[in-house]
Length: 402
Image (cartoon, rainbow, N blue to C red):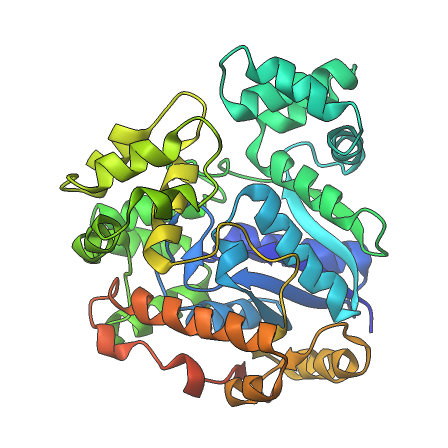
């Protein structure tokens, strides 16, 4: 069965996401399976997901996906490059995905592929070093370095958030049989908090929730996501966020010594010393981030660093994930799973207890995920309501959802 991969967070899932799944089937054929690789309890911007991963995965299946696999936390809380690389590895390892479909401002994979080739060229490191010496931010320096290698305007893709992530997808797929397919993005831009007409971003919906405009926020989610959110909220599992456990995070960070921050591989500009000093006295995460921010590093990277330190994650993700963990599936998804069990390059994990029979790397990764899950619970209104990672299996729809 042909399958299209989609890499996502669904934090929360909205109608733009539903449109992308529908476009994948329109472009590739109505019988195309949809495999989503979704972040679990933590998201790439450096925060807790507002609702649990099983609820979000189930909503995705009810909204057009067939199978949802979890992107483990070391990659979910990584840079755009690490996030894309980890998720792409899962799709490649599944042995079932023929395409990776993603939203894009440019609407074409061609300029993104050219940018990816420039970033992977032997001339790029030298060009980047020259631009970084000018003291600008890393994203700006990287874009200018690519412009010096790739005339014609293609490097402008690196100034647009979805295109930038698309470039990372193209890099991660080089040499594989999985082909990138860019779909024009409709509605508000990525991370825009404007909730106007048409599709809005997940950031805009989260902003409405923070302002207490819950009904407006729910009206902008996909219907299955709105229903799932209501259930999560009634159970005490939503909304989750840093504001619920800020002091727990700060307490953990105050225990860290300068050597612990240095081990996080923050670069060679003394950023780890800034974190070590600020973490010892900051009374809020906003105060901490304000004390350590520099022109070179985006705020999202600093938030990720703080959250990775809180969770005790390794400095960088391993080369590839150690298993394919199923969060939700429908009938077509279970058929994809049956094929994956024959062709996958990684173990397929549908029963958490089965991880004990897997190689040590898989066991260590799952134990790390379980610890991150317990700490996520502290970000929820009712921590005891978050299910035990070792006892929770995927959500399986016995009849086609949607």
